[in-house]
Amino acid sequence: MFTIEKLTALEILDSRGRPTVRTTCQLKSGSAGSASVPSGASTGKAEALELRDGDPRRYRGLGCRRAVRTVNETLHRALAGRSFASQQALDQAMIGLDATPNKSALGANAILAVSLAFSRAAANQAGQPLYLHFAGLLGETRRALPRPTINLFSGGKHAGGQSPLQDILLVPASAKTMDEALSATFAVYQCAVELAARKYGMRALVADEGGLAPPFPHAQAMLDDAVEAIQRAGFVPGKDVALAVDAASSHFFSRGRYQLGEESLDSAGMIDRLEEWVVRYPIVSLEDGLSEDDWDHWPKLRERLAGRCLVVGDDLLCTNPNRIRRAVETRAADTLLLKVNQIGTLTEAMEACRLARAARWSVTISARSGETEDDWLADLAVGWRGDQIKIGSIMRSERLSKYNRLLAIEAETEWPLVDWP
Ligand code: 2PG
Ligand code: MG
Image (cartoon, rainbow, N blue to C red):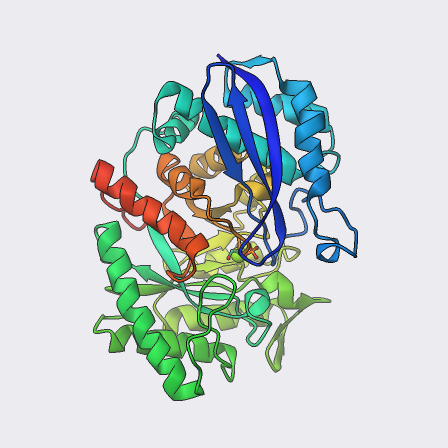
């Protein structure tokens, strides 16, 4: 049993300097836990509501004082003094208090901060590392570390829109350990810095997730340059280091057409283009290749890429069990991108994870573009045995806190990286 004594929240700033929520959950047992929630920029339309103050005079309306008050007053009053047998019991209580389909009454940022802080407090009460506590919640017994997919080049909403594709990520395919994966990434990243200087005259300025964002002449140049950087680092593209792409195409889709730079493609044309890239480049994972509204064409994309490349749904699925069920039924994807703040509680994210596993999908556990120094994501990805973890590049401390936590977990457990699905 876990008895909540006190819930307190604080408005803090995320990696873009925007306010977010940090909550501390104090248990009667004397154990406590704190957690901070992240925030996206290229958000899906079906995400749970992030409660913002809307006062244009303060942080351009992005203040989180209302969410903080919700934790300190509404949730504290409703939950303090109560005992919960499990994470599920606490989350269900908050879902009941909110009573809206998208957490618009209390705010997903307020609710998730409590959900996560409670989990940390419960792990502390049990004297368990957080990753083992998370594994216990899901009943996960397989032991391995997620394979990192690491941001190299950025575009889209994470880099001022200089290129339509949002992320080109490295997949250290032959690495057996986290240490090998990160050292290979460092080598390629350094070659990409040199390449950006040589080709684009750009110093190593980085985008929201620490990826390099030179002014690529067109989308495909991001892929050419990534392959060149892998080769210059002495690796064989596809064998040692492969590529993952987050096209985030909901954000360049309008009225049935994909605006890929100068080109305007319909859905069939976009599928052809993506397939061409998968054939030509060592792409092993493609996220949001189509828009969140393009449900009719997702099954065609999956069929075309089957066996060659993971077809990952982010904006399409929004970690939402209902949308995942629909995608499983229509065979629209084969990998869930899991972001707990898209749905707002650990319990619902667990349901999303279970649904994906039951459909034999793989699961990528992902950070947001707006992050904090909190590192719970690393524990979550290990505990829920994510096939991949997506944190961003190996630059910027809000990303590094998670990579460094993975290294600490690796040192503690000596678990190998999970095999590519
Ligand atoms: C994504 C994420 C992380 P954001 O699209 O997958 O890269 O971005 O948090 O802005 O939604
Ligand atoms: Mg995405």
